[in-house]
Image (cartoon, rainbow, N blue to C red; front, top):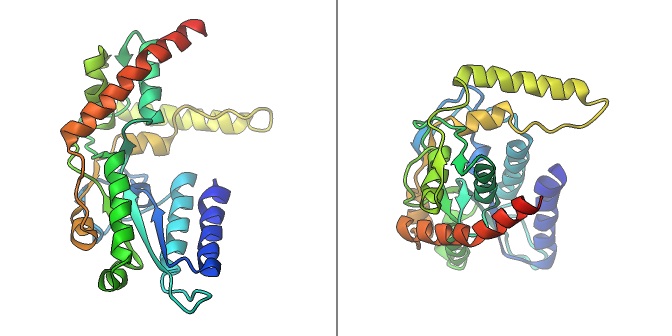
Length: 276
């Protein structure tokens, strides 16, 4: 993961300097902020929100280091005497056509008799973002770098990228997408959250003890459980102001497109499960 996220980003930055590429837009994630192990929430967070980040998950740490390197490279000298401009976009959980996470949850629900698993409490509100809007944010950032005044204002900055997707927990978001396809959802977590956390911790310790003999990746870890059960949502107003970003796809259209894609995958997944 370090090789892809950090070394890969560094190589791309060096290639930009050598080949006189004037702009670099890094696709980051809100996970470079948190949530922290205490599960402290962020509600309608902005780029100025103060938050005690304690990144323990390898994905979060490597994405943060790559983002830092990207922003530090802003203004570096190109071979032709020009200057590199960089920025970082921090989307929330990205959904839409091709989303392997939604496909995984749908498949697991099918194995469970068309009942989706509930791994997040209802009050842990997040705001996922549609993939088409994330792509549009990148286009707007690229356009901003072509305008001299905007280029200097945007260079070296990071931006949260969200849209008008409804505030829901991760589990209820899955249900929102899959209920039209005949899925229901569990009413409660499989166990109280505190006990669930202890259970996951013990599972992690067991996997660690077995590591000299076999490598087992637990299906759940404390970081993921905290992520799923922490209110963590953000505003896109700074991206609107600086980049001219706005949600090109409404929540209604994004949901419709995603459900249609899931519906197209449903018979394929059923066939795969029946043949396995």
